Length: 158
Image (cartoon, rainbow, N blue to C red):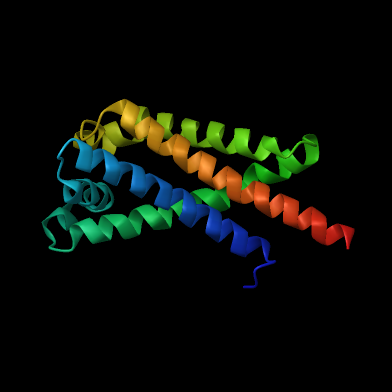
């Protein structure tokens, strides 16, 4: 996978978006003296409940989070990106669409999915903190896609 590959940029967008969330949640946890490992454990337990008892559950939760972040970026790139390129001429559309998409993902997660799968996870942090987390993911992902879009257009001009 080369640096000019679309898949490279999608992977980067997912990893950077996921990392933005990790940094935000880490800063929040430190500021309120919360147990950061409990968040990773809750993520792991949401996917596979018995994993909450594993010593490495926080790291498993981080791995799950980053994997889901990459899947989100690929889903966005495959479903929303073609529409953005087709209907919008301005590069800020990627940024706006990615924030809107991740805000919708947050709403679906915290009001539909998580209350069914792991209700305790919903109350682990304030809703505002989790919403900011997803907005930061969307901003980060949108910036990466905007940079890719600029590069792709500059390569076409050569």
